[in-house]
Image 1 (cartoon, rainbow, N blue to C red):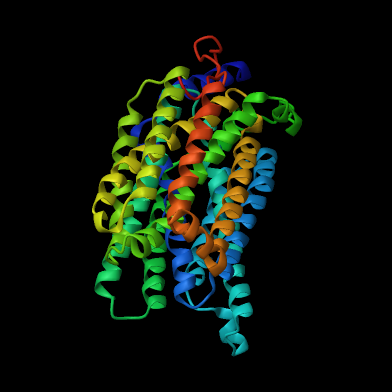
Image 2 (image 1 turned 60 degrees about the vertical axis):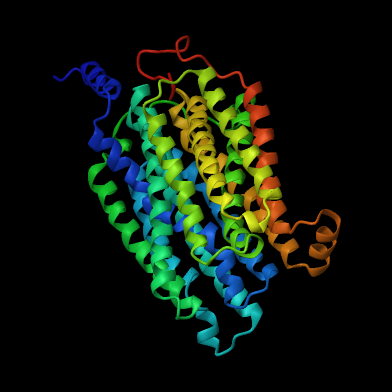
Length: 457
């Protein structure tokens, strides 16, 4: 008879073993479709919708509807994954929704064609519907992918490598998107905007889908491992996390970090074209520089040996860099717009430092409590998505208000785009660094256990 204790010991030993490069790379590629479509969503959606005739207020509604759908889906999907596991199945289903709906988000208004009218209300409803479907699929894929980190290995070095590799592929996806956009904006500059964005969507979906296939083929389903979703242990209640001070601190840091990256990404195209009066190609060149720098810093961080104090130090360094960049954005005159390329380098480094460390803090929070990891990632993403949608809705609504825009211009001498891009990320960076400083992150050396270790060492 086979000794079950021996089998469990063998499985535990496999979890403690470092993951190979192939496993790490195949895992990192699994979020490529989400990342490349998300980059297009935040960078070009508001610009695209206003270019095709929607008012800034209606464009903000489309963005908000998608973010709300993303947020609410995230929280419930996280709970379902904690109950049933099967992360790869969830990932595949979400990826299919993303691939099918994304082309319609940046395509023509389908309900308008069916109804034979082009009313602004119907356009808003039509784009909002596909934005909702896209974000539902996006949320399912994201939670499934993030929840796998603590389940694939208990080796702390491997966990850091998984997070860093995922972030590196995020940067590759963003860079690919801007390369595609630059090529299409250059080659197809004589055709209408809708056709340009439609081709950007098609190419992005094709590239992202190839990487999804690589992930599904090359990554082992962690649900088959006892430590991922342990049916023999009682599930962790939501209230368990709500009683932990560290949960709220990590939630604040992660949400503020996401606000920094998403708000800056959403208003960067408006800023370089309208405020700095740069060429159309800058809509792709400036973001590309940001993500090249982010990619380089992310690769460097992958080789870093972490400790709790170093985690907070690196995050604070990224926050300081963003505060300096925000001040530069606010005061940069249009005649000196070439300095934006230098500021982009600083922003790229700041984004990488803050993103890698904030996501890693989630892993520290989860630690050995793997039966509730999907809820943690889901709930934090919920707060992130909803808060981001609300902030972008407010800023875009103000941008569409002639009276508010005129009053702010008179009072401060700056546009809402300039103030939103410069001050909002800077303030969020300042607040998040203060919260990170107050964290009492557990020391991995003192809480090391035989089977399960925290994300960082």
